[in-house]
Image (cartoon, rainbow, N blue to C red; front, side, top):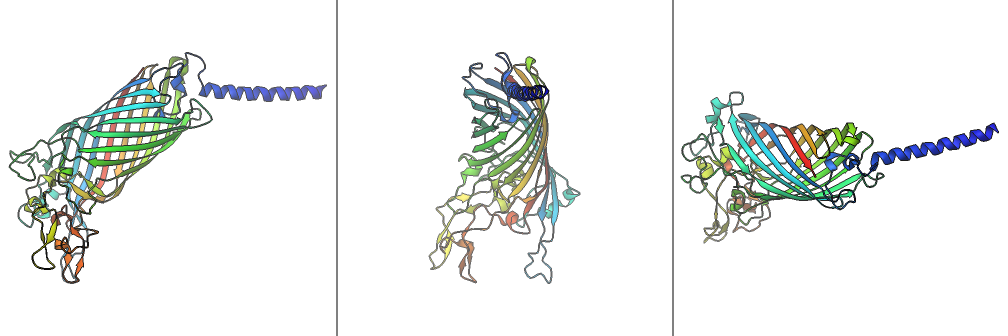
Length: 477
């Protein structure tokens, strides 16, 4: 009899244990009642998607308002070149010399909305408004005292002076419109992680950037074609962009790890300096491509389901690869507004066959290509780490505050090659024909400037750090 009782007791214990586990799983991953806060089941803030047409939640609308303060610092250096006995060509580059300390401060107001369209499908709208953006080049370990020598133009004058100050800019760069879709949602099926994919488009709407010098005379932003004509500083990169992303998260009680990747491609608009001079060469003149991979952990130490309250802390690390490409570097304003003859003289866009057989001359029907400050940069990587906290005060309101630190690897900011690859025509070779060997090295690159792009003259961006601080509020309907 005692044996049978032990068997029944054991079976009852197993059944009760399984029931408790199932109830616990359901409680953690499913609504406990019609009035239970559905958002308490979401796996992570980063993978939260507004939705619609659910029985207990026919429509989601989240209004977002936030402000970000960003501080950027970098050291700008320039290669040196020696021409001494024993060095055959004088092209030995032993080191770099200090040029300037770059500092930037940007304040941005973010206005946005997330609109639920269907189950786990949302329209995402963002409008970043730049309230203030200031930039300057200052002394770097005594560089200002020798700037006249280190920044001398062989044709006379200087490339730019140190200290240097850009005008204060403000306005709208772009409007962002995107779609987020949770292909899998742990809230609906607690056996699966949440998987969100998204696509986002940036539409440039602001006045394109123009190189300016706030410490110059009456013409602060001189036109590349005619320095006596002034322009507005502008605020937009003048590029449309597309961003794709994929994110995964899985909640385990109070902890939610997540991972994801994203990629961005930009497309210059024709009304910007980036797209204005577009010679038909084989050179890829596109901006850099960005690819990122992120890992993060969200911790939820406090959650009161009945009061719709939750506190969470998010810790994230992200690595980004920046491919080679033409871009607005830290020297954009300084070089683009320069009146040095080596930069102001336009390059021909193309060459053609001359009257003498085997010769190549400037094609006078091609457009002249002016230098507007946009340079070709080397590839580099950056590392981003952040920490943020989100406090949901009730059913309809939540706040997020956070900070981030970014370190970018050193890279050359002026690396345009003198010749583009692919051309084998002597008629189009121009100075890219080697008369000694009879080889065609390509077609002349109209973006190349000897004074900044040749080895021994190139500028580098080193020790780049960015500190971001932000606070965001959201109203959820």
